[in-house]
Image (tube, rainbow, N blue to C red; front, side):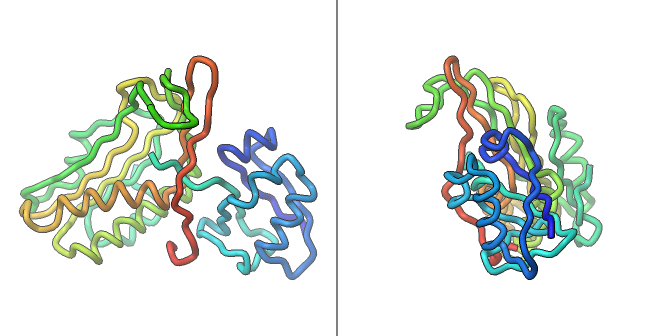
Length: 243
């Protein structure tokens, strides 16, 4: 059978395309698919041992079955550094977005506020010019963000559910990730949590939201400097337990 595989970030660059086709015998698993991919696309060989795999927008393990028609994607660990899919089933106001547009924070807050809401705590990330990290350009000219958008918005909804499990008094949750070229000083990420009072876990929930975004939402950034550009890959490796 033939499996179409979406590629992102480093893998996309090394293959020279954002989609490849691999032939495997049935029944197939992620492990056999990866072996066939390495054979068919040798330029990906060095990336495959650390690559993450998703099947139908969920993190997959090596024993996960792969069938014709499945949506399969390969990507590196995510960068440490309108209502989305699945939002309809959520119990409180939400706003999830992967967008090229500038943030309108007041409009996002307006989506979360209701008569019983008395506090909204938010985190906003920005592009900084001085990276000061080994292996990256010493001075950043701009960042390029890329996302597996359909899966990213599902994971944002998952983070909201996790927040409500840990902090039941938190109501609205907003998570936004910008993509494309972002210059120094521009917003990159935004997480907001709403509750009736500030002492109902809303600070911790917002911190959890941005930390979890950096772990499981498939977004990558490329640091672009004067003489080189490098994809930034994180250390956290999501598993099926993160679904």
